[in-house]
Image (tube, rainbow, N blue to C red; front, side, top):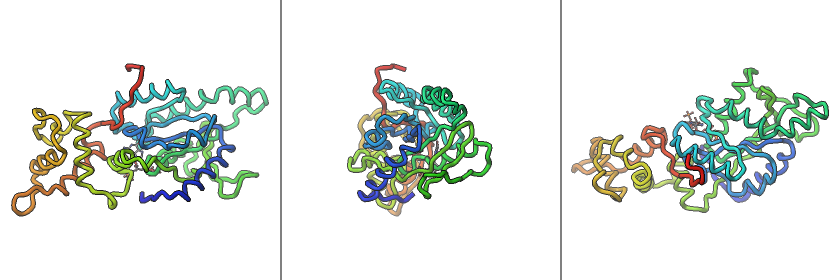
Length: 292
Ligand code: G4P
């Protein structure tokens, strides 16, 4: 997904979200479970104000399950319901629907009192590019039993708005636009790049791989030695470039003169992290009072 973020787009998206907010009862905000902070939107909270929200820690199949539970506790401490999700398999979908009903139980009871039993809960899905919105939406549509997406217009709604019936008493509003991350923060940009949320053509892959290796060596010291059969255990704080060279040598990635093709090794390391081959690892770890 080659997406560029421009200030003009941001203002427009912000307006569109604010407008569309009136049409829904619930926001489902997708974040990447490996980088919940960097993949969240910095101003969404201000935009959605008191509208109920559920955070979906998507790609949880690639994140450290212990950390994901800590993030869930951390969100809970802030009064937000968060759910671990794997949009590829649908794991977490039923927990999401259940949580949605729970979060909106007062609203549902009020509808019932007014004779609107069974009124569908209307949801808006938000998230930065590549976080898995389409996968999640397709999952919801697949689970609706409707087969193909049912698209229909609603009276009084601008014509570009479309609603999808997602079954089980839910309706989905098409995404009002692309949310942006805190990209002015270099750490955020780097974490997004590690997970593949930024176009690789604009990145220094070798430098990126080196920094990823340093971060992983700190957070998950066994992971690199285990995957690449390189011995790093005796030496802490090894520079990323050194680790990269050892990996390249071990994998036989050599160029003429016997030098290691570090560019190729970098691409391998990044690919393997992004596809989960290095193990389930969370790059941004939660600090919570709850010691779960
Ligand atoms: P977007 O609409 O928010 O931009 O994201 P999209 O659904 O297109 O998902 C972006 C990539 O993330 C896709 O991979 C998708 O398969 C993958 N993805 C989404 N949710 C999950 C998840 O819960 N777990 C895992 N492991 N991956 C997920 P891709 O490489 O672009 O395509 P492909 O691998 O599906 O071919």
